[in-house]
Image 1 (spheres, rainbow, N blue to C red):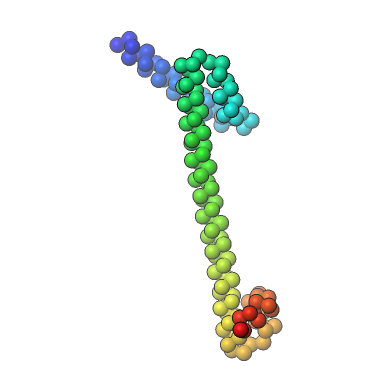
Image 2: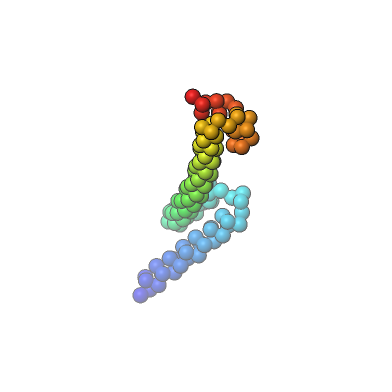
Length: 124
């Protein structure tokens, strides 16, 4: 029973320590994980492994969050580009239709916002 109590206390201590490290990492923008590694060098080998494990866990979580944000931004940019391309294609289609109706190029430019060179490409 005493051994189990000791293990339980160590696990709770590790949880408290992890919470403490997370708090410090979130509260201080100037503190980097390298500093945590450097501090761990001064602690006993047994405890250093715990700190290193926590630091590695924090790094992994940070990388996962970064990847999530990157994916979200990438999807947003992709959708924006797709919508822009769709609008551009729509303008080209309107210009083709107006050319088919023999509308003058200057009026097509005003109606679509396309440049004269782009409209001339559509004529060929």
